[in-house]
Image (tube, rainbow, N blue to C red; front, side, top):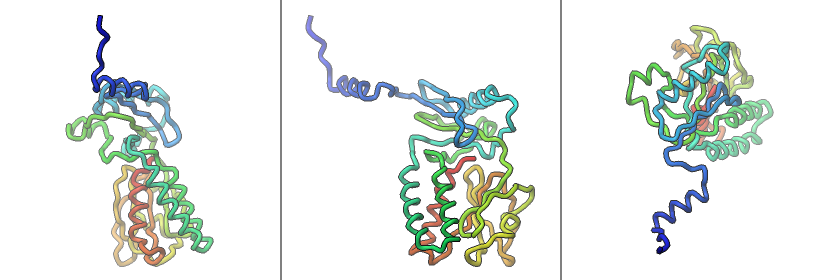
Length: 256
């Protein structure tokens, strides 16, 4: 009997299996979290899975984990694509902020340090810009993509705070209050310069510019868990506007 002859394709497939024994076409894993530090289960599928299927199973797993835990905050749920890591973007921006930090007076260095700390505590991958509200997904087929690869799904409880960050001397958390605007949370802030517009990063990653000066203020509600970013002033670097944009773009990937 003649020995079996392997084609080039057979050899490539065999080589792939040998160097990556856990690799499986169509394999999908979704890590379930209640917050950045707490992963309570991993959903595993041998094939790509629809978002609504993953959400349904994730909610069941969350309920079984602790039936007494707080109400799920749908606005803050997030799907993170771990196949698209943020490490390089974070490292480069943090490096630039540390270089900037040493040129500033002590009270401003603290503000930069808190921005760096927040960036360091972002998730490992990019936030998928899609709703993870199960009712919305079920009612909109175009919002129900197939997921393939490695993801993380965050299912947080309703937060009770608002975080303030950026070009001010007292970066802090504030208790969330209904029907309050950014101006309310910034009324005692010590800004680095005369600021008239700030950026709100909502828990779902959505961005809004909110005017807060006496001459341009308009009321905008802010969701619990939102982050208020006070942009750094012109002249702080050679291109502060671009620096602010890069910070905000990364902060959109934040999870509760």
